[in-house]
Length: 113
Image 1: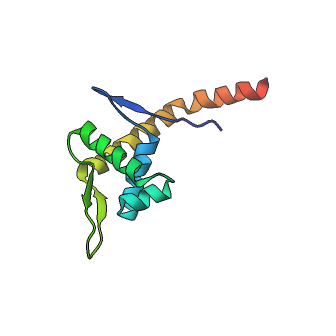
Image 2: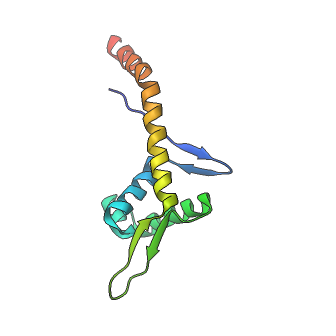
Image 3: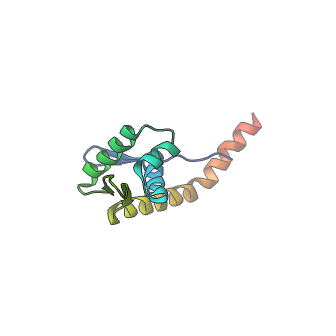
């Protein structure tokens, strides 16, 4: 069955898609930007740059990070970060539902060839 990949272009020049959303989900799951980056085979710098890009895009932090020390650092999604993930996944579900019949028809065209 075909699948749908979604990217949302936001004004003025922001963009979110599956990669940034997965990064936020991994940060939520592991409580760490570095652990999320490792899970995604991404450098810590790349992950941090993406978080900073999203922070700028939304005008407020999507991730709250605490620096290391005796007790170690950590990171968690802010209310904005949680909302971004939730809304993106809702848009994705709606798009998949709306496109399901058309994607099946496209797959049928391939099978008929």
